[in-house]
Image (cartoon, rainbow, N blue to C red):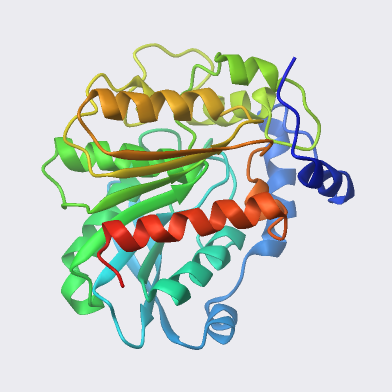
Length: 314
């Protein structure tokens, strides 16, 4: 038994183009090829959002240069968001579809954005992706005055949400940049993939299911793993104290439900601040796949008041 999909989302899922099932590492190139159509050029993004200046910059990490998309509003508010795209650790692009959705928030909130193009597994296993993300965060903090940022949040979707949580842990443990908040949108947090929600959504066509999740984690960490670092899988962290306020959301009908709820609960147990939303009938990535659905609209609108509050925006 498993929670049902929201009826509107379920009807839309049947009409969406079928995705190639992700069942092994050999399926990754096909998924990447399919996602290439969503990648925009910087010029295209600039045409879509004329109130912003778009530039390409580079941070330097242990494994080399990391491309950054820097988006600056005409009238900076002082607030910025360092953003990490989704894609299960194996696909996705910092100029992809979820960055386009992010820019609509930036337009409404007058945010400066830095979107990082971290390297992907399995070609670049842990710790390269999170080290790339941390290097991009350091670059953003070092250039904050130039970008008109005096208060900075970090955020991400799916794998990007997990990497954002891991980057926050790194920043705390290394004495890195101070962060005002962490925005974790259905984040990928736990490599063990054995929760009730993971088992409920095993072999489910059309969505990110338990088998796809196993491929993503295997690409990042390998087949046989012990002593997994919390900087790879934040759910493994034994200490969640001293972290910035968090926003977490997740669908009730997806693999990540239980690990996200557990992470929020552990943040509270550690004396932290967290706002948690569990969207009834939402499958993984529902707001991106069916943005016009009522549940998607509600989820997207819930994030904006939180960002306004934690970033002291009008």
